[in-house]
Length: 178
Image 1 (tube, rainbow, N blue to C red):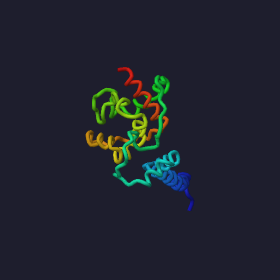
Image 2 (image 1 turned 180 degrees about the vertical axis):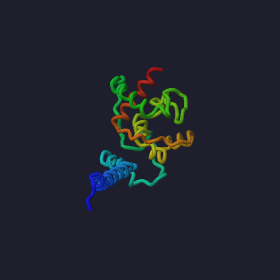
Image 3 (image 1 turned 90 degrees about the vertical axis):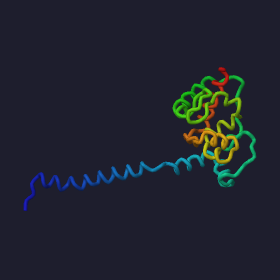
Image 4 (image 1 turned 60 degrees about the vertical axis):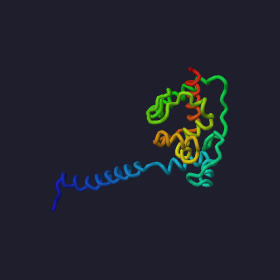
């Protein structure tokens, strides 16, 4: 039995089409992972002290309130003057990741308005809240109050400590303009 050119072509293309579909589906399944575990692994590598603190404390455990919050930020150096370049960087990050829930006024959107936040909170607390909102609202007394008042858990935007520092500078700049 002699096969035509079209029959031969179809015979060879079907397996290759199936292979392409298998690779495509595999890529989609691999790429659709939540990434949650990947981020936690990356965070744990960057912030070994934070990972150890998580293991040492139980959820809901009350800690001593030193006004600095819970997270990797233990000290922050802020100057008397605003670092304009850092504030500009913070503005870009804030507009991309924070404005859906926060305004720089007293107006509440989803979360509280941030006018005067740098006067009410220590810089370490602000940065820890930006970096570590879930743990803060579980353990930090002030963050717990905010969650109870606003009834919405602040979304973890996966913001690095460096970017949180830039946002802090932008918030400081906003508060000094009053």
